[in-house]
Image (cartoon, rainbow, N blue to C red):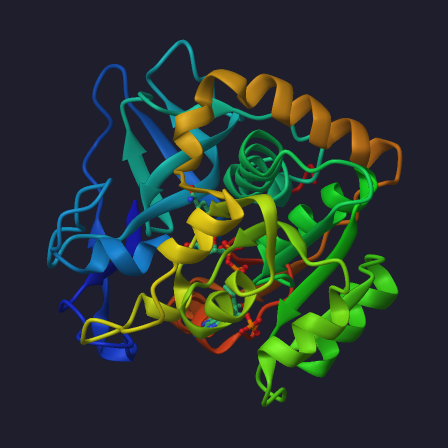
Length: 338
Ligand SMILES: NC(=O)c1ccc[n+]([C@@H]2O[C@H](COP(=O)([O-])OP(=O)(O)OC[C@H]3O[C@@H](n4cnc5c(N)ncnc54)[C@H](OP(=O)(O)O)[C@@H]3O)[C@@H](O)[C@H]2O)c1
């Protein structure tokens, strides 16, 4: 069986480019006892992967040079020598960017194609959805009537954060990078206000107008100057969930900004960074909550799906120019049952 792979070709300095990636093709070996052959259906591209392309110390080890990039993939078992994963099972795993791969089954989670579309397991019912739920509810702790601001609002995490905040009875303001996204947030998802940071010259003024009662919860997906503008509007006892800092992931020098500590002190605010896996013991509750709201029609879900394995580098790079609305995925092969 031949497989196509995408390897990390070089460690990017600044924004990755097409030459960060290298396509190869090779013959896979015969399956050993305990192994399965996996055919990839959907491959997730996520901003955190940028961090793994560098060799700086982080909460996950860096990708190895000249080895396949790894990430969230939904795949089908097409051959099996593992009795726990029979042929035809569909699984979710952290797998190599390959059209076909071999696994010993460890770390694979079976998923049920009859419960939800397979792509949802990489989005709203997967890591991004759990991140939104846990970060907003367990750190942000939004109360009815409070003002919640979310940056990166039109992405995989942000769209879910804003909608949960609306379900909790909050006034919700989203920040995103195009007029289409702003319209989508307000018209489709019911955000109270949304601000296009790319066309707004005075972010603090725009936020101040959108948040007449100040900001009680800030769910930060982007960091940098957008966050600086939000901090100046924090209310007493505000909560800031630091989820992502995408505006800084490609920085080549140490970014400078106003110091936030005096604001945190004066407003007695809580600012907490988190990684979704910190809340693994609450994923059951979170997944049930998300699934329930989807079934009740309270939580809408958007995906941007690129077609074909060749599109992976482009889809990943598009995260940094904001090409996606909702969760960005790449569909590598079709699943006849979904
Ligand atoms: N802590 C955790 O466990 C955890 C888990 C998942 C994700 N995250 C983080 O959460 C954030 C969102 O992740 P996601 O998967 O939902 O991605 P996403 O929002 O679906 O995609 C990234 C979005 O970021 C925006 N963006 C890119 N460069 C930007 C910049 N310089 N300034 C402001 N916005 C920029 C773009 O939208 P615009 O058009 O609006 O610019 C783009 O669509 C990321 O920072 C990610 O690393 C953290």
